[in-house]
Length: 71
Image 1 (cartoon, rainbow, N blue to C red):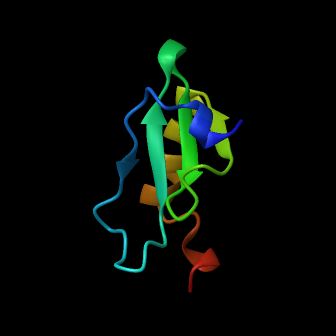
Image 2: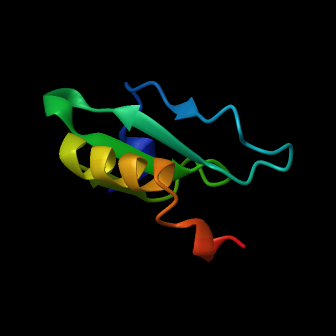
């Protein structure tokens, strides 16, 4: 789905985003799904996930499951 088609949503950026804009943004969608987009390409593609999928990802990130991917 194109992120530009989601004009009526509020995109949220992490407070951990860096000054060069390398981050993703999330938006709550009607029906409980959550969209994710690249902040540097706000009109580009958006991936849409269920709340359970995002919750599993966030829990994994908190637990350090993905730490090996960034360093």
